[in-house]
Length: 181
Image 1: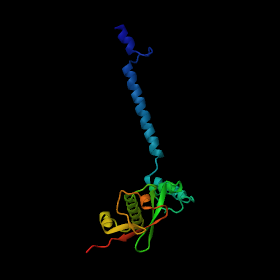
Image 2: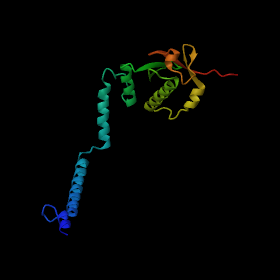
Image 3: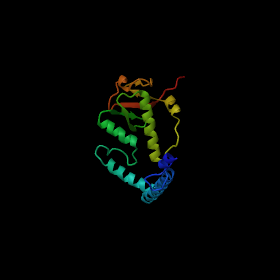
Image 4: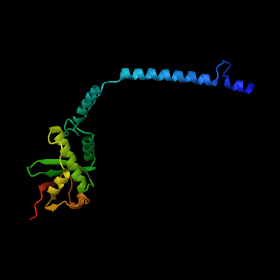
């Protein structure tokens, strides 16, 4: 009985281990609620955080390395531009029938499928910024149009662009397929 009492009593203060745990739990709970109140006071509204982020992004885009990027730049576009600078990516200039040139950035060992996906991302971002068409059927696009480099059709999605001889700043034509009769 004596051993039991000495285990439950701490430091002769008369509090049992159980009582001390309850007091410690109450103290932690009180400190957590105070921390939560302080965080609420320091927290900024979403709109203010968004404004701060956009200001920082605008300053970042003024850098000579990134000055070609649009104001509403995405992280993917920034990363692509940096990869270009370090030689990890290349720009393929995709020429449409109307003469518009789309500068598409892909990694050095990209496949035809990677180029098609990059064209899709480029067009979606462009339309989003211009408020154009909301949805494009890319399955239809790739059935109706094809990519051509120096007279050769880029039909094998798994083949690397390098294997077709495509290098940085080369032009690839985006043109309508001829219908077979």
